[in-house]
Image (cartoon, rainbow, N blue to C red; front, side):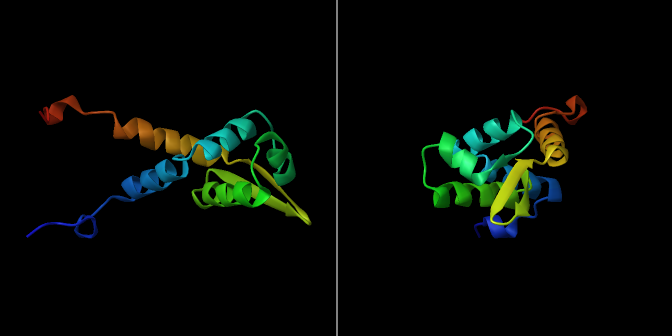
Length: 110
């Protein structure tokens, strides 16, 4: 009997890391994050002035980054201001580091 992804029990850290990795999987999102990392905060309209895409497209990418917890938004109608969620970035960094840190006492896989 074949096992499916639904049959495998993933740790909370693996699931969280997969969510972050998925959010990072588009070049526009990486551009947005790079821009936000150089500023304290940025409005959606400012991002559309820098990244040559429709505001609706930028908003979809911002939503994915928000859902992954990598950025945070503050609503000041009619505008939304975004900035990096530095605490979650530090956590994501630790998760990635721990994923690739091997305990030598466990032996070798191959």
